[in-house]
Length: 196
Image 1 (cartoon, rainbow, N blue to C red):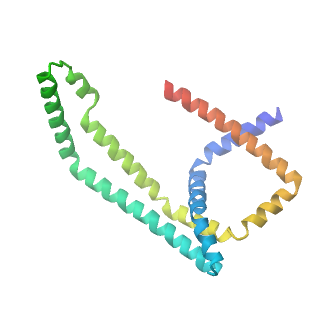
Image 2: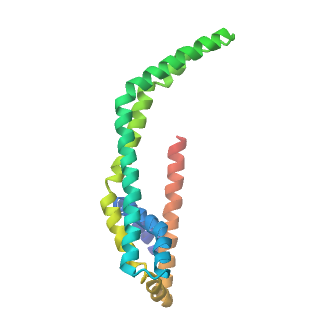
Image 3: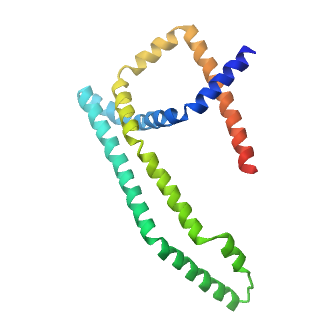
């Protein structure tokens, strides 16, 4: 019973900590991508601080370019939405005429009602705005990346100290088991929700 209660608390904690976990995991991913560069620079004799700063600069530039591309794409999409809708309607008219000339009689009115180009363009715009809002968390992610890059040098020793004590290792295994249980429940719930 205590294990079930612990699992519920861990699952609730993971669920409600999503606003914090997403930037932390994003930063961990970016750090994992940058770590080989930092390690390479260290092996070449570059001091730790400079290697970390260079890795951070690369991350900053790459994420900045991604943010710039997204913002330009959103502004262009917003300005050209009517032209895309008009072009889609012209394509629809040409396709209908061509198919009827070939003898195919398809009710594209129902298709056009289902696939409303204005709604599709709005959905694409909302998706891109959502991606851009994710980029606004960039300052937090970059701060975490800087911290993680700084800790790269001591991280292996910290892990060794943590796992040297078997009691700590057992606690980590229990926590991982609870997290896996939560992920299975979350995946099953998402699957059922997606099917419905």
